[in-house]
Length: 258
Image (cartoon, rainbow, N blue to C red; front, side, top):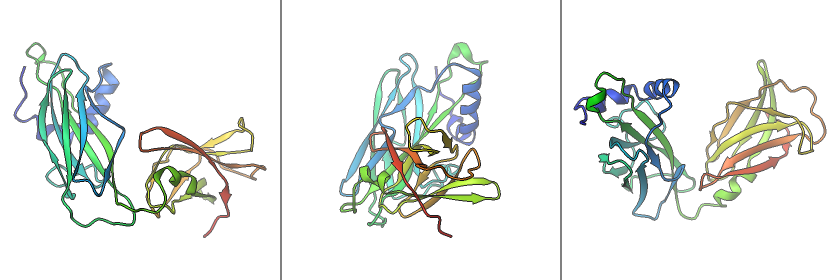
């Protein structure tokens, strides 16, 4: 087996498309797994280590890694972030692992709140001699890297309970607005408006939630338009902690501001 000398530049441009196509026509899965669903970089550390493993016990793969500041369309050459990552390109044998070293280059970043970057892991499968006439697909994984300064107010565990929610009516329906007064990013796993105080109350869910930045505001459209709010209506949501575990929270609705 061997790797094509042209595979890295070509596969980056079509990585997302290839991933969708592969999953729709084949039961096979990407072999590379990142340890942890997110990485936290304490500002006082010289570097952090991220572990990758090849879950395919039989085949090796070629891997390219880089960071970006949120624009997933940028190539590794175009991305400009204050970090170095080594090694940037490497081969992982089947069933083996590789440690990445991520180092902060000390260019200024905010000291009163977290900054977020994205770790990109592009997996390129080998060309197997017996399958030269078969389609080959690349997989790209993106994982959040939170750069966390020392001495931030509060804790990331408390950030979810500090969120302030309000309900807004628009020409297209109803939206939940969230304001994050904390110094930490909050990544959602689920967002819904619970139409009552009981655990079995109907939930009007949003399908467009993402992440709210420190000091930021986001709006998430609800599936159904909301009329008169019943007694006990509240926001039921879950967010991911530093370990990637979903934390369930219930929050009251605040009066809408304009």
